[in-house]
Length: 314
Image (cartoon, rainbow, N blue to C red; front, side, top):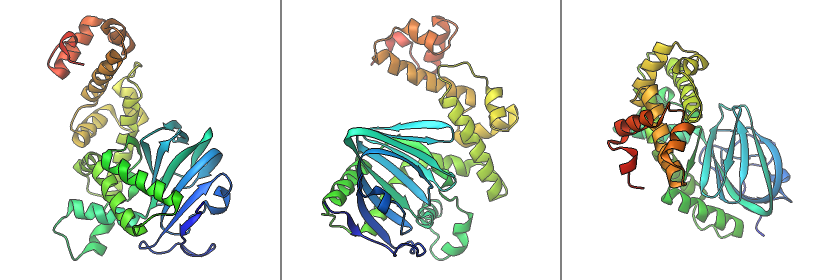
């Protein structure tokens, strides 16, 4: 089996510039020997049956599972990556833990992207007419701190990742590695357009303030995402985000285009449709989602969807 397609600088040297990329395939046998990154950009496909390790993210990292499961633990939250899901992480994280336990073998790919490339693409998105002042303008853009989330890869991204993973493992990669990095960066950033736009909606005088405010808002947004089945007040969310309730409300609406109250209601209503498809009754769903009764649930449902639950087409 092909172990390496391209290698960057030798071990012990500094990472290469953002125009170099190593491509490798790892298994249980050679993971420890090859896991250290040699270049700022890296494509690492893998087929592992057992692994427990700590990873220090550098730049923007994309973890994608094609077959099997990888488990990540970061920021006191566990992520279970299964078929077709990916996780974006970045160098703002001190470390993340990974575990794999699959006798058949988990087939996955890890792509590390230099943050300068991400910033350059952000510049092109935000200032499409800016051609000559990249070196001065890019310092005002957000580094990959913007990207920490779990998602399901769309068709184009999944097809590209599948191609890279299969070709890397077989030693048949027939495209330049940096060309693949550029294409992946474009798809990932475009897939995060909504989050990027939310970030730039924040009206702050300083870049450092915007970063900190956005970080706190994401903390609150994640709490709301995790509270669909629990009773959690917006005041509790605001306090956990280190903001006053009023400031959290105002900034959340400015950033995400909706109040935290409506955001949570919409998440619960969307979840109710998912639960209904699983066979639960509307009464059971209303109880699970912490509505006082079916009438209160139906009123909220109609407000969000425009029709009563009984008329929704599943």
